[in-house]
Amino acid sequence: MKKAIVLGADGQLGKTLFLLSKNIDVDFLFCSKSETDITNKESLRKVFHKTNFEYCINCAAYTNVEKAEDEIEKAILINANGVRNIAEVCKENSTKLIHISTDYVFDGTNDKPYKTTDLTNPINQYGKSKLLGEKYLKEVLKEHYIIRTSWLYSPFGKNFVKTIIKHIQNDANLKITTKEIGTPTSCIELSRFIIFLMIKDNISYGIYHFSARGSTTWYDFAIEIAENYDPKKVSYISATDNFKTRAQRPEYSVLDISKTEKIYGQLPKWQNSLKEVLEELKKFP
Ligand SMILES: NC(=O)c1ccc[n+]([C@@H]2O[C@H](COP(=O)([O-])OP(=O)(O)OC[C@H]3O[C@@H](n4cnc5c(N)ncnc54)[C@H](OP(=O)(O)O)[C@@H]3O)[C@@H](O)[C@H]2O)c1
Image (cartoon, rainbow, N blue to C red; front, top):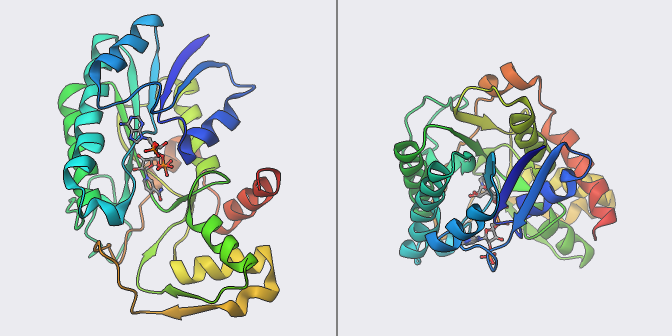
């Protein structure tokens, strides 16, 4: 049986992978930050020396886009230097690396979905640190998959869907921005794709864009969440085009998923994936 190590296992993607890992023909080892810190190469070496992993899945990252503006060094330490550590240890152990990156490597000036070959130009510190991580990984290890994804949500951890639901439950009024256009992506769908890459085993290395089909604004995403969760509460949500954030965000970050769909088949519309996660949320309130 194939063996795989998951780093950053306590994050929302790591936890979703754990949920889907049962009944799969892969033997997973899930490591949280307290068990394996990716900024500490020796801690990585130690766990890699115990077992022969065919795959490493890196779900570990510094993901606070706002705080990254002030904690630039920390974001680089984790999202760039940490990824280089993982790549180096994977190389030492002949392990293939599946790494997750972001739509925020783009500047948002496109008027059509971003292809994997489009020019990157991040406009915030989080995006810059993630792009540097991609660069280091490509320099160190040929046997890699970089999966750029967008607007992740799941039944676990902190994410937009759970935040909107919490506010709705408290009857709070919400102002949500119409300024950004992107694609919400379910961690369940992303986990299925990660598992597909491992099971298939012969997919060409390189960059893949992964999101659901379609695009929306955060405002329309919030409306869709409310309509599905409790339609009476839709009126609590209003639109704004004047939402101040510390970090600049790309106004348009829709990913072109055609390369992924060619090998994987058609992806679901974001509205359908949302329904599945809302169902799962009932089990993990
Ligand atoms: N969330 C999104 O909307 C989004 C969009 C596009 C791409 N992505 C990418 O998708 C991937 C998964 O994101 P996510 O939403 O699952 O993030 P998340 O929920 O924030 O999980 C990240 C995990 O990494 C851990 N971590 C931080 N520093 C670490 C270190 N030095 N060593 C080991 N683990 C460490 C975190 O632990 P602590 O919480 O204890 O620090 C957390 O458990 C990331 O690469 C992210 O950049 C996310």
